[in-house]
Image (cartoon, rainbow, N blue to C red; front, top):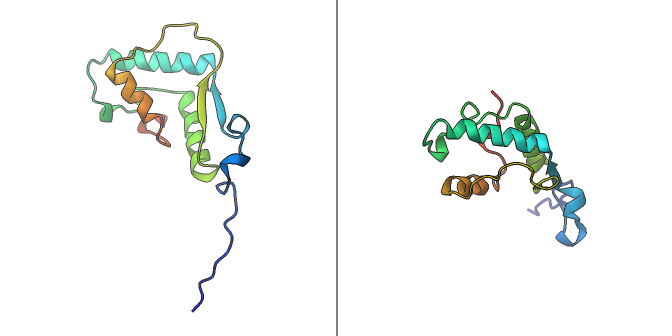
Length: 120
């Protein structure tokens, strides 16, 4: 029996040489997005030591940005399969510390979507 082989089609089929990630996958976090993350980070830090796996929408609330991140997660699953988040403009507020916790958070952002992306 001969297998039914068909070309794969859709957004998830691409060659790196044919993609301009700045046009196809770049998403900028606005100043208000960054401010929301900083508020959530302060809220989390106020709770003391919280294990990374225990971070939830309740202890890291992103009331507006959470929906945006869920949409980006859906785009990862059904679109090209990649995206780049970057902060718009120059930093105007305090920087997130480079503590071990912050580095773990940065590593988490490489995954398609995290539990903290859910709205409450």
